[in-house]
Image 1 (cartoon, each protein chain N blue to C red):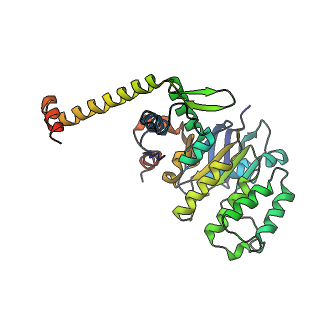
Image 2 (image 1 turned 90 degrees about the vertical axis):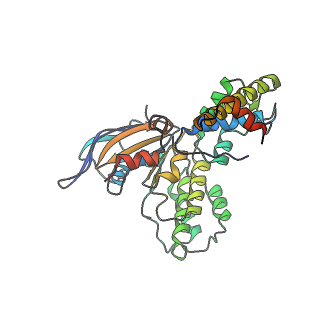
Image 3 (image 1 turned 180 degrees about the vertical axis):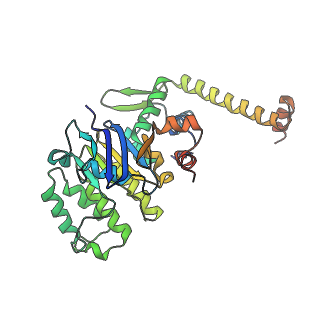
Length: 117
Length: 231
């Protein structure tokens, strides 16, 4: 799994975004154990506290959970994963409309344009 | 109690002020970047913490105590310039560290050196500069210390060696320990930093969690540093 960071934005926010994408895409599967904070930090070469902060944020959103002494796991709640996927997809669509709008293309035309692709 | 605290710390060399009224607290479990141009006072501050210089005024406290025998046990220090005798072979240096430091773990150090395909019979003087820096870093990081202080660990090495050095720092620093890395090569290390300290002309001009600063300025630490110190 590849994580790519841009130094211009908080690293932990980028890590949250990318982890969520990997979870909804099923690259981290429901119920799968995540690497430990330290292992993870090493793999992606960021600060362990940054990883900790990002995982806490995703845990807040219930996408992962902690089993005491055992580590962190991806939620088994497939419905929740599906909902987050829709939410992220909605954001991408909004972004597409906004970008097209900047080019002077309205929503309807943007949809037609997409269908032609 | 803070791991490290500097209170109104100043150092003058004759009349020249190298460090002016520095106040600083370093908690446990953080990787901190001490960032400043050449001659900004980074090394002076580090030498004061390591008891290699005496403050002109103010004080340094490590676990609440002044620097001395006790603080040297818990601080693992990588100086800017080597203090090792280059005529020594790698295994002699390992023995030297073992005798000197109770908290030095020779086995992991040997393993790390072996991963580099290093012959323990080789003298330091026969190695490239990059290789010597790796060896020293491995030795310093193989101590179970409370505070690691690395003075310009990335100076003069190639990008691949830089990656290796960052990996070695990340994977070996003791849990609950803190690491202070002084450098002017910010882009290479900013991702592993929790907090940054900007130092200029002997004064601390900014301290902040790295991500907070990025968020506030919408820029990388490297970029913010350049803006701050535009000549």
